[in-house]
Image (cartoon, rainbow, N blue to C red; front, side, top):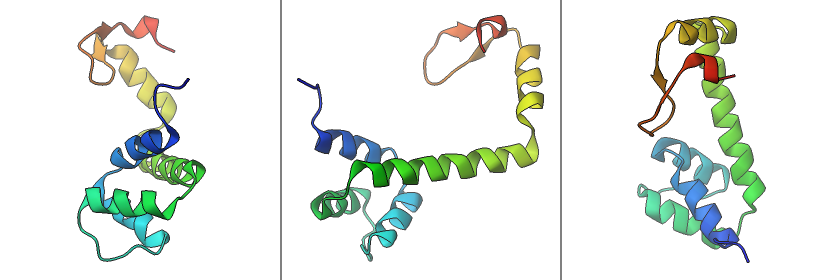
Length: 103
């Protein structure tokens, strides 16, 4: 048995989207005029959308962010810069990762 229901997973995914983008997603679904993330998520869940729509939206926004970053620094140059560091932190954890241990 899964730890979370599909509705709970969908709620977590929707909760991870910044409010500005969540409003955009809601508008795409025909949900307008709501300013609260909680209320938007509630309406989206009531609408019964499929998880793949949320996944596609999140992936689209991620790809837009990567393209924006690539205009500033290429993937190869970013990797070179990271390898110059002695230690760096990935994510929220407090464990330092040495560049030679990353790929």
